[in-house]
Length: 200
Image 1 (spheres, rainbow, N blue to C red):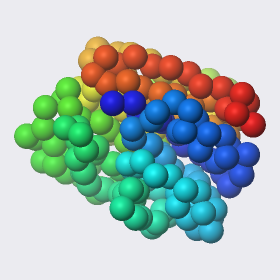
Image 2: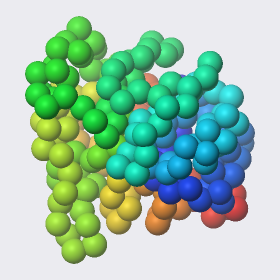
Image 3: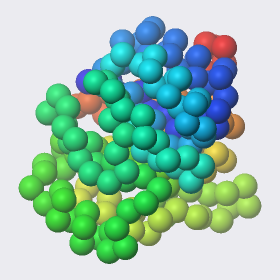
């Protein structure tokens, strides 16, 4: 399964057009949009053009409500596709995240669990330009304890890329500044960086 990881479009038509070209050229199976599309009009126009399975969450700049037979907008919950479980957490989640997340995923094999959030986990690809980490400790704790095969997020434009820690591959795929998306192939966990400028 080939997963295209994206986030933080911030209503840029050039980015949206490039992502659609990447999906077509690279035989993507699943599209991930980890928040901050921006306006409802932009979001709906873009997502309507995607004809593969997609999972999207809201960011701090939007509340994604668009869904169709391909796209699921989930701010708290799990949906399954092709043997994998996509645990999606948007801009709003339970106060007692640790217990709620543990209860929701307790019977899921970590090797089949994909964690999608807008915000990064603390200390992993979450640094601002001044070096300060601003990720969420709750997300780091969950990743350390549950060990999902993949954690996809955005929000921090200055610290994009991917890291492998233990069994989990972490991907910060914020597009707004880096103009880079990431394709993750499962179960091999191979990660490919895609430069959007080549599609603009």
